Length: 398
Image (cartoon, rainbow, N blue to C red; front, side):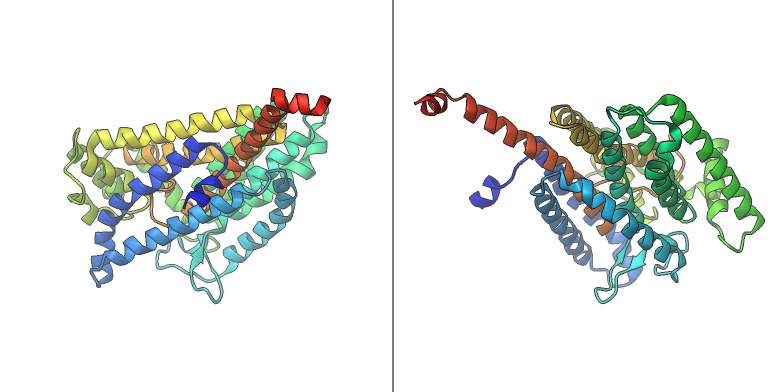
């Protein structure tokens, strides 16, 4: 065990935050899983506990493995992985339904032989952010025209987003927003960004009009988005707001201190209580104190991400940390905002808290990349300390 800890590099506080989130997740996931267990008929919640443990164990193995890879290698890996994720997204789009839920069926791909399902859009998000960071670092000291950036930068972004959009509008919107933020921070000209944002809105409008004209091509998806936005904007309580209403009841029931671990009532009525709406169950069981504790952990993570980015030794390292780190915190804030009806229902999970292997693993992949950049900084600092040691200077001169 001591050998393992000695091999852990990178920002120790990020390790601590990830560990705290993972440990904290067991109680609400185990509690919320009781509903799933009884719906499935076996009533055994321990299986869900073990499954969540295995997801987190593999996730931290991913963090450990990835943070050992020198982050400069991610430049080349992003070039290789972009075609791979495009193929996965195409396969996902045209495959038969693999889940019982009609709203989620087209987001997943079943891995042959192993048998578990995988969500390629989450992998595509991480790969795309690394790719964009690589390109922005490459043109950092150059003057480029908009035309020169269309093929190497915006074409991969366009294809990834278009392939995700039909099945998952919220993920598409988050990825697009994060790409715009990253390009802005990377010094990409504002007038070019305005063109991209305008073009994105035009493409989205054309897609919606096409889906409305040919509903058999994409059944239910556009209607689902529109109904969620309409239900959010009208401010009235309807049957379509069932999830939000149950989430608000759960939050209101929690008060300051909560009803206690495992004592949630709304978990029996709230769909996706162990994933999309787990924040509502946390506030019900642990109160406002538990919700604020969770919020502070994510804000602390954001603070450490900014620190690691500022201390990175290269432009690519700085942009890489921001590119893969910001979406984690952004997704967490969106999940919390949905639970308190500050945002329309999106289906986004709470990173490292919600159940679900793909979400946990891709979050851990992003954290591993951040720690890889941080570990490199530690190596440089150790080298500087080694070179500044008076005994070393003396030994070199003798």
